Length: 354
Ligand SMILES: NC(=O)c1ccc[n+]([C@@H]2O[C@H](COP(=O)([O-])OP(=O)(O)OC[C@H]3O[C@@H](n4cnc5c(N)ncnc54)[C@H](OP(=O)(O)O)[C@@H]3O)[C@@H](O)[C@H]2O)c1
Picture 1 (cartoon, rainbow, N blue to C red):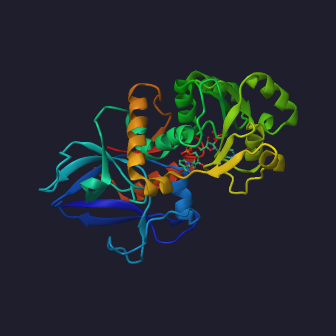
Picture 2: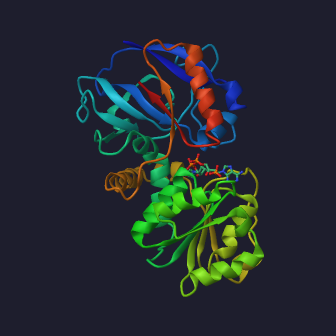
């Protein structure tokens, strides 16, 4: 039996105000159950809009953990270590590492218990801790965006915004391996040359700012770069003018996909891209795809893990927030997550349990 601390919420709203800590006991695993100790969990934009109540996929709120009000445990990704196994567990042993097969399992807690078929095993030290925690959502997404929506051939281009995100950086690296050229849009900043260098080092073909993405004058420079080839795929995770800038550059018969909305507003598509150029505008959601084809998701996770292991996808730039499992207080635990929420605007945050 262990006592777990979980980051829970009972109402939808501002994540900083809504989260609280709940302690509950977990009995020893029986049959096919395994007891998990958290190793690390990232903060993703979707985790925060889920608590805000504006993300369509959510865990149910109930009182199964002994909370006074119906509540849900926050967090969708994480890396776990098996610390106890039930008598009928076949595929896991104590010490193994694993990630959840599905989202909405409530990963932001110190300990948890689940059935073994709800987990994907990660060979220990096969990839870094940060890579393991981000493979099932961001790794899978980057790979499927590049490989399942259209057949981009070597020498052809992909344009994306949000290129400094974890997904964006995965896209750059996987595209490079596939021989695909990338045109990467990032927000301007005082140290823009430093950021451009980082993305070029990852394998970006060209990096431009949002101002250049939305500038009609800059179009001729891009045409010069892409001369003799096509921009077959446009990836949008921002929305607003940034999305319009991206779709405007997609070649006739190409595909424009929206998979995120960092600016929570509509996407405007110039009419000629639809009528005269037949650019297909589609959406992508890893969660829904996994519901329809769980084996496809497992396959993508393993492919992304291999790309990480082989060094095609390098380690991820994260800021660690450390939870010391011994001597932890509820206040400290809560504050660690609140600090991680705030700092996630600067860099991907990884809460690490030691
Ligand atoms: N549909 C799916 O299945 C799926 C799966 C995974 C992720 N996603 C989406 O993919 C996106 C990236 O996720 P992630 O976990 O990789 O994110 P992340 O590493 O946390 O990075 C977020 C990125 O968003 C950019 N950003 C934030 N606000 C912005 C604004 N107002 N204008 C322009 N850029 C802005 C940031 O730019 P700076 O670098 O300039 O700070 C940063 O690069 C998110 O929208 C997420 O919801 C979707």
